[in-house]
Image 1: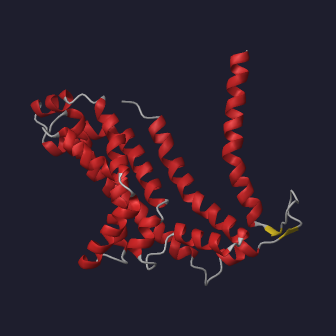
Image 2: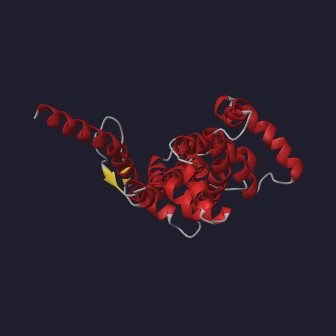
Image 3: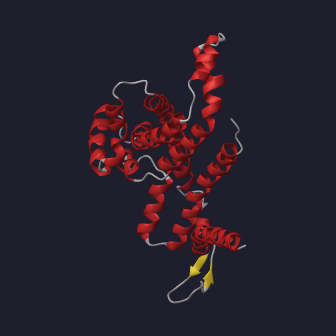
Amino acid sequence: MSRTLLKSTLTLGLGVSALLPVVLLAVWSFAGRWYFPALWPSEWSVRAWQSVFSPTSQVWTALWGSLWVASVTAVLGTAIALPAARALSLGTVRVKGLLSALLLAPLVLPSFASVMGIQVIFIRLGLADTRPGVVLAHLIPVVPYAVVLLGGVFGGYDARLEGAARTLGASRSQVFWRVTLPVILPGVLVSLLFAFLVSWSEYLLTLIVGGGQVLTLPLLLFSAVQGGDYAITGALSLLYIAPTLAVFAVIAPRVQGWRT
């Protein structure tokens, strides 16, 4: 009984700690006047939401920019990480140590220094201030995370299944789509989710490589924070959280309910 009570208490505590910031953001978004030391707004207002959803607002442009960049980055990052993780996990390359170090280096190196070098190269290639350039920049932190996640998936993968399928006459493409992918699909979905979240929350790379021309929600949110308008910040923060929760809600049941 005590163990059940402890588990319920921990679950409740985690739920409250996760929901409390969201509740506070919602309160701030409707706060007209809220001054210290008051525990509750003295005045309520929908000004922030009217501003966010006004026809002249940049929110929709930023939202579409974030969705486009994060979605393309997630798909490309997972596609690049898939063969790399397979090669590292199944030992199909001789220089596993060197390849692993190269793939995981972006997680260790200072991001600001690498971004400045990337910006110079992208300017010369004409990729600066463009969405494709921002996507390529986001792949730098996304691919290592995807490699780590998919490496764990391939760690428990039995490659003999592919050999058996080839023996029965399946082509390479048939083996991948009908044998390999169904087995590793939960890991691929998790990789897509985390790649999307990493790209979605990226600020520095978008700011420097996008040059302010590629507008995303993080850029708009940081601008609101610097402006000191807490109501607008609260409303934008809720909009910033909503798509990530939606993506998680779509992917999580498919991963949890999958049976191999």
